[in-house]
Amino acid sequence: MSDTPFRIGLLGHGTVGRAVAELLPARAEAIAAITGLRPEITGVLTTRSGDFDEVVGGADLIVEVMGGLDPARQYVLAAIRAGKHVVTANKQLLSQHGDELWREAREHGVQLRFEAAVAGVVPVIRVLQETLAGAHVERISGIVNGTTNFILSQMAATGASYADALAEAQELGYAETDPTDDVTGRDAAAKMAILARLAFDTPVHIDQVSCEGIEAITPEDLQYAHDLDLGLKLIGTAERVPAGIAVSVHPAFLYSGHPLASVSGPFNAVTIESADITEITLSGPGAGGPQTASAILGDIVSAMIPPASTPEPRESLEVVADIESSFYLHLEVADRPGVLAQVAQLLGLQGASVRSVVQKGLGDNARLVMVVHPLLESRFYAAVELIAGLDFVRSKPRAIRVIEEEYQ
Image (cartoon, rainbow, N blue to C red):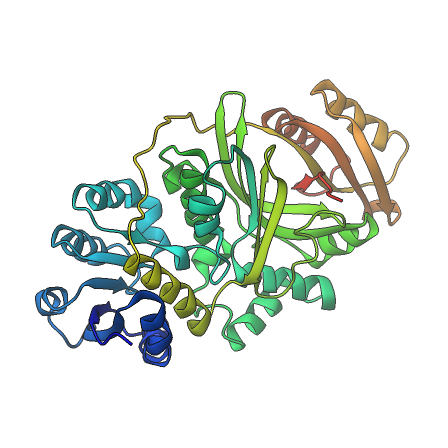
């Protein structure tokens, strides 16, 4: 058994940092048997203690679990330029400055590993970088935020309001005190920017990701979804389109045959589609200190067995926002003759055809819910704007995307 040390500097000692500090010694002997090197933490930097230069100077590899952009970006760049491998779980850092960091890592001959930045313990980064490196990926769809998936699962199962389901998620530790990044979709958008960069070999910044959260979802939407045999998830999608690629995060209804439809609670799942492989789905816990620490430990082991790197992008694909989708449309209307015909006429003028319709209630409390077949989002929302102006429509229409694909 080798006693040659492999020195690790830890930047951050919160929930994930403490979990890494606990897991590493417990697995050190097994890692030494695999790599011939025994990992050990030789320095820790927190907001209150430690010296960055000393931590970096005494390490072979730096683990960054501080979060945020500053000073994390400066620290990671400094560590790379000092010739140290870096493992990070910082999705915001990578989604905004990833190509700068990967370029610096290539220039300085070190590894930048980031499995824990997306989908927790689900090994989607490694699968894209290594297992499917030879595949031509066409689309990635994922539930990549456990907080929102738990909230929507509770709303569907119990009929709870969004506010009550969020409060429960906070009580159980699935949601932060300030859940803004999660519920607005920005957390998922950062992860999809990273996945799109790897899948399509082209730079993608978080600001290029179309993003919509779950704050406006109501129990009524989920009840109608049940009536239409649909389930509701916050879905991140990155896909090739004729003009380039499209990357988005938004609530979407799924039919029961979709591989993501049954993923509930705080779990994450990612479906990768390619003509070479058809489709594979990876799923597992998407958050939590021990789970994230496990993904970080896997990256540490990978960095101890070089070489591996994120190559310079070979493509420069346009990121497209206006793509085709099916939609669920919820209208509160006065129940009188001709309502459905007028709505269908305005949809038809924009090229939309109706797949299914449910009507509930009578008189001034009628509700009309329909699913329309795919059309360009811009054309659908143009129709919705016209429908909103009809005199029998009593409140702002609500629209949610529908993913029609089902897999056997």
